[in-house]
Image (cartoon, rainbow, N blue to C red; front, side, top):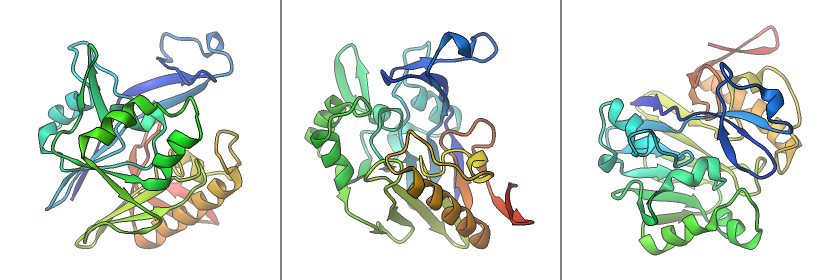
Length: 254
């Protein structure tokens, strides 16, 4: 089993939910008041049975006009057409914008041969609870594609993949565990988006239920230590893929 980070860059985002490229080498954060500064990186996981994408990024394109996520997958030596599963933690734009490819108004599936696995409650919330974080025009196309596989609650998707309903960051957030032989890959998405978030306890204002998210970070951190998980951190500034240790009553990133 192999996991790769598909780095899409760093961005600032304010209350308008507009993602603007931000390079700390040339940009001043003071010029972007009331903004969060985040890194975005979906993941590619190869198992013996599937080529899996975990969340799809922003759907932005590079200088060549090709989707960044496609460029990154090709650079890693794979073909985007070979992706068989897309596992969605939730549907906020920075995670779901790349589900489709929009070229001059012509929309197509980013991964035409894949099954998109989505928590049903999250899909329904995107329509019933309007938010700038959701781009329902993307979901309208997905609905017509016939490629969406809805799941509910927590459960086992197949022999290798399980999903756990968490809430926390948004009402219907979920995380994924991929197991093969004696190896486990954990994708915590926005419950555990950066390894540094394990190093201190805090309640984030951007979470739907900040206290629940804080508790979940600690719970998943301990499970990662006890079961030696390889963890994928979607918004990591440095280590996007890492294991977690615990000593002297504190987490450490290995």
